[in-house]
Length: 273
Image 1 (tube, rainbow, N blue to C red):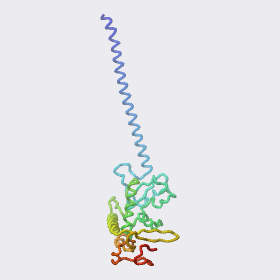
Image 2: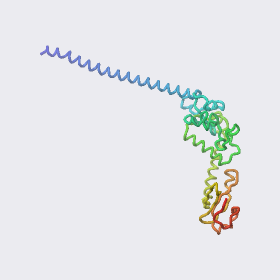
Image 3: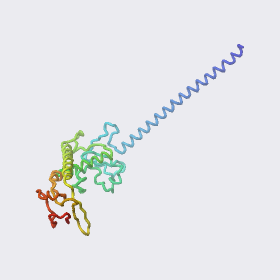
Image 4: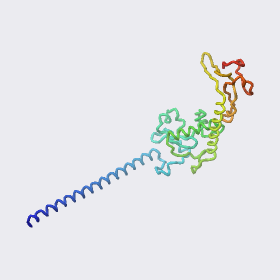
């Protein structure tokens, strides 16, 4: 019996050793796999960092430097002529990466004149010559300035903000200047005036209108009589006085400021224009 037990003992010990060795081998395998995965992640991070830096060679990949401060000459490098660089665009001093729209902003694209510069004024003036491609909004109306600010909102929603342009709208520390604050105040004022003008227009029903090349234009009222009426708020919005056609009841026709269309009878409901 003792002999049998002595023969079984080594066999059991060997089995335990093999089991222990198997566990240790699995643990070592898991560790090696973990090291391999960590190495792969590190290589991928280095690749992404290299790719980012090659696209923006003067940018830092550090999150604290996402808002780069550009000088005018620096921004000009990103005008789409160098295929190794991103295409950047400035508006009101904010710089956006528009590379994903390179068919529009790249060389030969319809909006390439906006690339590599801040041409805020051209967004509303439509002047794409040298003088028109400027960041100055001097002389524009509140309504036009509001449109420029709305264009900036479009780029904020559609493209990536990558920095600020040092100059008219941001100082060399990246802080907004008095010019940017003034622009945003005028845009807010323009929005208020437009809202108020719409409220005023809604008080008087607008005329119906149509136009054809053969017959010209005409206006008419289903209820009431067509009259031209001034829109005084337009002066504050655009710097110009404008008029619109509104329909007035017969008992309102004596109110001051109403203008009968040329060649139209006083109580006509349809007028040629």
